[in-house]
Amino acid sequence: MKLHQDSSGALNTVTGYGPGYVEINLQRHSGSIVLLPDVPVIAWPVTAFDTLTAADFDLLLALGPELVIFGSGPRLRFPHPRLTAALSAQRIGVETMDFKAACRTYNILIAEGRKVAAALLIEA
Image 1: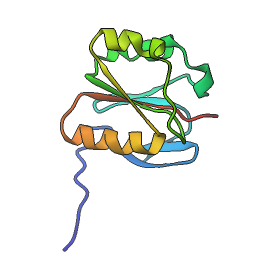
Image 2: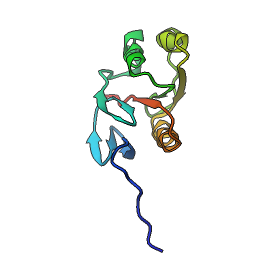
Image 3: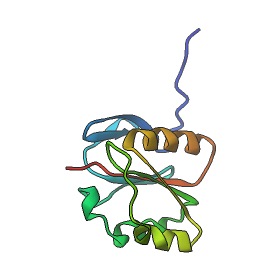
């Protein structure tokens, strides 16, 4: 049986990842990004977990997702609740997972038609 990838081109899909990069629709990104299914990839000016601020997460408010998946880098690290408080106040869920799990989960959720954003931290 011949298998074909079902790709509409209309949705941003994670097509690969590794140390220091993520590929979205086969285009490589080596810096942190915010990813939504139907919006151009947004460069996220975060270079290290220890430098995260509330303003970094506030950027996601205007995008209006129902859920934010935060890919915290190569290992699972949780941001302080004060950093994501504005999202919670607007009833936007925040799930934290390591970078690889965040990429996989994002793909699953967009396939289900969910309005999800992935904030993927790629540390410099």
